[in-house]
Amino acid sequence: QVQLLESGGGLVQAGGSLRLSCGVSGGAFRTNAMGWFRQAPGKEREFAAAITWSGGRTYYADSVKGRFTVSRDNAKNTMYLQMNNLKPEDTAVYYCAQGPTFISGSNYDTEREYDYWGQGTQVTVSS
Image 1 (cartoon, one colour):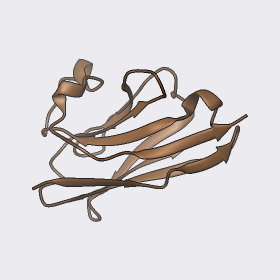
Image 2 (cartoon, rainbow, N blue to C red):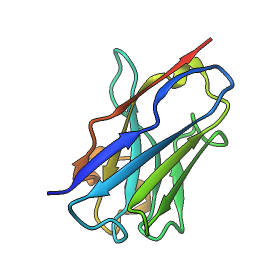
Image 3 (cartoon, one colour):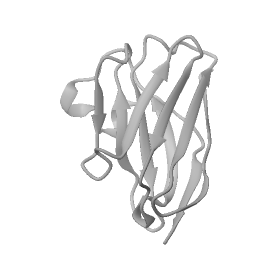
C-alpha cells in the first residue's frame, strides 16, 4: 500500500520561507509523477506545483510561480516544495499526491490524474 507523508508545515510571517517534504513508502516513487495541491479554509483544493518522474520538468500554478520550487530526490523517495516570499493567501493545508509515470502536460493540475494522496500539512502565514 502506497503511503505519502507530508512534513514541514508550520506558522511563518509574511515574507518568510518554509520547505515541505513528502516521503513515499510502500510502492514506487522514482517512476511516478508527483504533485502538490493545497486547500485554503472555505475553498476547494487547488493545484500548486508538480514534477515529472525524472524531475526534468516542473509545473506551477500562476499564484506560486516564481516563489515556490518543487524538486525530488529519487534516492530518498522524497519530494520537496520550497516556498519563499510567503503571503497570507498561501495559508492552506498542503497535500502531496502521486500519479502515474506520465501525465499529459496539460493535466498536471488535475486532481483525478493522481492516485495516492497524503494527509496534508498545515501552512499558516501571518500578516
